[in-house]
Amino acid sequence: MGINFPAQFGLTFNQIARILGQARFSNMMAAAPVAVTIGGALSYAGGDFIFAFQGGNTTAFWRYTISTNVWTVMAAAPVAVAGGALSYTGGDFI
Image (cartoon, rainbow, N blue to C red; front, side):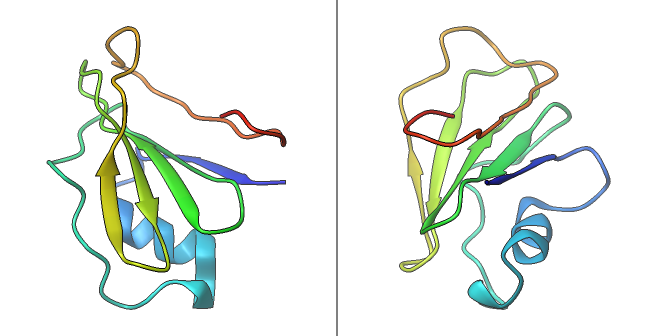
């Protein structure tokens, strides 16, 4: 099962990602594409990807690839995310 973590505790996405992945992540991760605000969220489903909402009433949705240290801008969320959450319960969907 994956790990889901709201980005509302004063930590950066990179700090949270290192906590979630422990030794799997490098000490210096690439910065998220733009600043993450209140309502941002991360979900780690195991494997090579972390998915993220920017929050802040935006539709921004990203995927971080652990093995290449690269953020990819994904298709926008269908509605703006003000107080976001991501959840992974298994399978092919977040």
